[in-house]
Length: 454
Image (cartoon, rainbow, N blue to C red; front, side, top):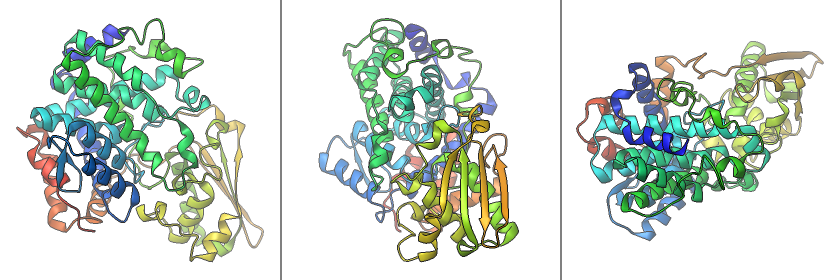
């Protein structure tokens, strides 16, 4: 399996992607780029601190640090940009794999792409390849299995996806790509311990680690550095390390003919953990239909699959806390990026009071759908004693329920416009649209890398 996967990376080419996959890749790159640039807002501590760290380390100026106007080494740029890629928690995600691959792959492909002078088509192909490999590793390990052991699938599996993306852009042959995957296995890491960090700095740092470690693995392998050669096959494999019930056959199943890692990505309408998106759609529908305000709600119950409750029930992180996100959504009739950085319970007693009336409960009827779908049931008890309830299995933004072109454009403009004037919004959009035929990444990198103006 290790050699087969490495050989696939070594032989990969942009032409291997069907037109539908190339089109989908461009869509998620556009969406992920907007989320990445929005995270460079210096009002948000994650981007401010990680880019300051990258600047302090110095390094060969070969790769752009998004929104900050300077370049550093590919390794440090991948770390900084990967961290920002997931900071706003509004970039595309993979429901089945429980992954945030775009947050890892855009920074990885940008860092190595700038270093080697890649064209736009190869950049997009690297993103697609990395997403596909990350997804395959996650479903082979089992995302629920990783959670049960305390590992973060996006971080552990993202390292392998980043290695594939970087290795492709560096032109690794099969033997070098084999070593690169071995070196990725030596670095693969990421614990769910970030759930106890209320600053939310450690949460996106997991994606920065994955991008940095994947870039490091590929660069070391390119230099001739040795590494394990059978991390998917025998000895100390990743299947023994990160799972107790792996399905190794899924790693290579339909490799090269199915691209579920990119085609099944969902695009987020809300800035928060994806587990809460179906519930938000249901709740906001009830809010609009019944004109509900926080004071109108005596109790709010969210029923959710048992295996995912740990991530959303009274989580210290605002972005992952049902008791925070749902009341804020009722009060604002929606969510803003700033809501996960600025606690709306402070200064809004109605939100604070409703937060104390939210309960999360397991529901056995929903368990069988997890993790493919984050099926949710929202039950609202009004002050008059009426109980109104709604179930939602598929959130808006899933491939089965896609956002409209207008909604995608509005989201892009809102995110980029939060840190840039209209002319830069248009410039970034144009640079992304031109990527399939762009001879270099210069225009795209410049539109992303220039300092932000919040």
